[in-house]
Length: 302
Length: 302
Image 1: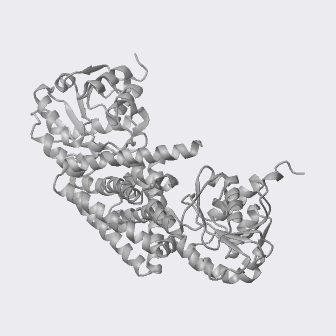
Image 2: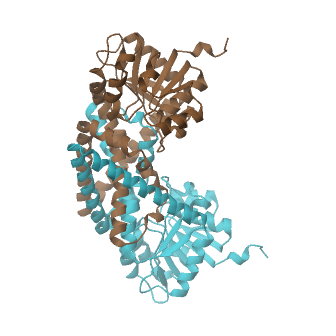
Image 3: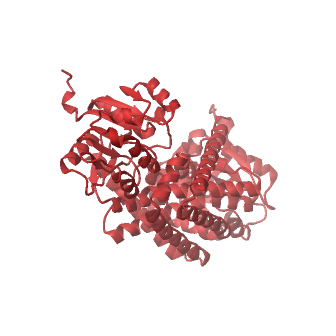
């Protein structure tokens, strides 16, 4: 008997969508032996071929229906706008008692997409492992991606409590800290700590690019660490982000409006030479940012 | 004779202001032996004491006038709003033929502050080594801070060509690539690649903080790499940044307006579900950001 077999939580896990997250989960399962088998499906032949070559899944299927057929846990790792399509493909092929979860950065819209196709006897637990890099595709995954990061689960009316606990254990085995909250709160939190910063990063690069075109010279090459750090995420997958913004429209627009108000205040304080006000804003911000760092360090040392 | 004595460019260098940049220059000079003596001055007793303990300067003076008295090169490393004060203190104590330079992130306003106090026989070469971290103070400096980074010099009517070349060699000995441009172009470039991103970082933290207060919970702790990366600079020195924004008001407001216009466009595209447009903006941005990375790698491998 395998010495690590006591870790096994699910017999068969099906991963639908084999990008950075899907491939990292598969590698994590393999490394930590938390399922007996991992099946996979990806939309394009190229990705399926690549995943087969990389060899961290037991079998790659040509259809999503084939991949989920015998699965106890199905993890949807597709752009958040594609969940309804996948549910239409798999809904008649799911095993009784199976759990469906997802990894999308938006929860309310994903619940709306999935819930309407959910068969009786299958539980859906909306989820979001908050981990990522700016790289995409099956070759960019790695088993340690989730280590010491947070995973938010947003149980709703159709989530079974026992199955929720099983899924919590699954993410914990992959190294994550798991918290639960309402889908609405999740969407507002993520709009703030992730979606807005990504939108800002895209827009910083775009603003610089427009000025370079106007002045007909390349000056972003002078960027020290700063510009590169905060625009790193502007290299992320365009389709994934398009879907996130559209599917989390309400929260994103709310926080974007608040952000633009803040910028407009700062602009007025600069225009009127309000040195005291600027200094106090920046001092408060520094304190706050250092507090965030402390909180994260505390979580990581737990 | 010291084997590295052929590197010596200046006999005595005076560093006015011993924070991250000033102390890094002192350490860099010491390590690479590019001056025979380094003198220093800082406004507070605490900083002077700390710098003395750290021991990378030959002498720390209680007055700026004392520090510059015998110096061939004076490097002003104070917040950009403090240059006029320093010039009033040192103008009657400068050696004939000395060079004054600075390291400020704004050039036009600094020239205005310094030029009016510049005695005959002393040359001013406005400068800006584009390097930094989010840490401040004499203890945060290190000799390699400037390595493979860009330094922009913005010669103006009172800059002597021969002395400009000497200063270029100085920064090159510290590991930098040196470029020259007009003060106006510098200020616009820096507004775009540094000042705007910093303003945005301060404002991202502030926006998140306001929402946490409203919802009465701490959720920035869920931040994965992203939020931490692009808000890193929000931990920077508040007084330095207050001065930069006020002293580069024109360029900062110009680029901030362009940035807010871009955000407003993105908001409209999200509100109207304009998926194609969003995807094409993000695809272009990703291309552009990867191009910036390539340009920087090219500079670094030169």
